[in-house]
Image 1 (cartoon, rainbow, N blue to C red):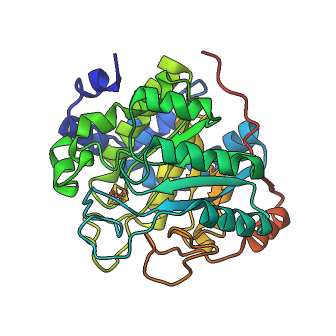
Image 2 (tube, rainbow, N blue to C red):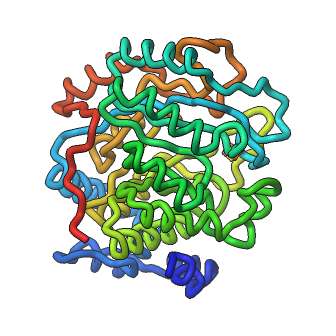
Length: 371
Ligand code: SF4
């Protein structure tokens, strides 16, 4: 059994139609519901009809978030280890066909990154690589983890999909959180964006969270790339995926909200989303489940992040560099995976949090769900 069996019982266009058929009455009914909300309720929350109710959604979202998570925000920074990638995703600066210098950090370079990250006050790093088993396979990743673990309270990972036994190896090395984004749940169009490499295999990627969970890794980050397909429909499939993982494995899920930004060498966004619509999406997830962690990266502006913080977001990156060795070794521009919009230092960001009554935390001390 995997999420594939669930996914195959749904049709993208049926879900799309049902979302766009939701009425204001449907939204009011869901907002007034006192018990748990299910995936049918999510159709209303993510619908165009719900846009009118955004202020009410934000208020409910704020209340639910603070009740479950308090005013704690998990802070982390990405540490890019390698930009070698054999995929050719049309939306990414690291794609195979882009002529950029390819780098994989050595032990010394990783140690140099550690020194700078520690000096910035960071205690949680997200290890990121392009997708290359040859250049950044499980042996390299495990070795990097062993180098990093003594210096950070928490280490998580966003790398290529791996086999179940490889995830077991990483779990044995102490990894407890992995991010793997489906990018879009539109199976027919998925191949258009991913024309080359392992990432062409829609179902292999779709079943990756199952392999992670079966390997004993209890925290999984999901997400879509906003800008590829109808974001409302993609969000609905993500909610179903979260629901499935939570019910099947007791996984603690998080969701991220990367928006595709125009940039040289990559495709322009096919669909756009306004700030209010992104806020709707954040609140819709929170009203759907008060257990999901919601994370917002430095792709977003400081102004939007500061606002979103109050209405459902529980994790944020800060002080980020999005190129391998970006903190200490390769400071030149041009190697980044994407441009960041919030340039505040970790210190400035944490000061903003404290001034607004929030507490920055490095490890999530949120108890795991009961299986
Ligand atoms: S999104 Fe990931 S897999 Fe695709 S080209 Fe970029 S680094 Fe490679």
